[in-house]
Length: 267
Figure (tube, rainbow, N blue to C red):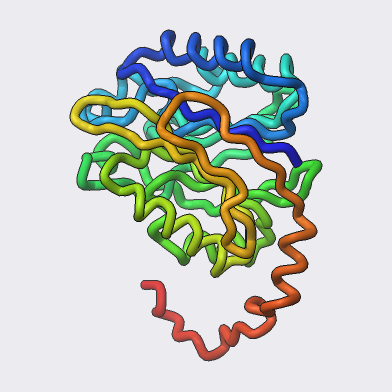
């Protein structure tokens, strides 16, 4: 499976500019060999406290302009698109929502960010996601999580137990946390014996700057690909047979003893 992760500088609070940027890069840099393309968290608006306090100005429905463009790109370029995340209005609620779109331009999966970063008032703008879905694709079972979620191993273990062999992380992970980013992603890959495919933005927004370093990490914890702090694609190949091999070498899942885990262990 050929993975292409797009890291780019998000224009602050400027949807049209960000859509145009993705279109420009897709048109100039996609080769036709891609199976899955990944965008960053809140890629159409950027991520900031000011945006969160004015979220009604930026949130749109699933039939809005941004989602329509993502569907068009998936169909035009014959790719599966992990559409980063965008603010989406669902009735009275607003979610930091990730969409999985297939080659036909159809939404086949949704994930609403579960853990919201209160230090930047993200929890004021969005409602917490309540579901931990796993999506069946032509390649196998995958899942999506968002940025701050990587600090919560119970979430990643749950979706791994539900069958995900690759977990896609869409993020706005800022400086000076590059060391956290690398260690957390590798730890999640090692402990769950799955691929981690992580997309982070570059550039700056408000008082925050972003280091990029999008990564693909194997189920053995090895870095398959890693970007720098510049705009562009980070590419790599993943093979789900490697997941099965690693899980046979170290039988973590077989050796679990959940009958001894107290019911309140995660409460």
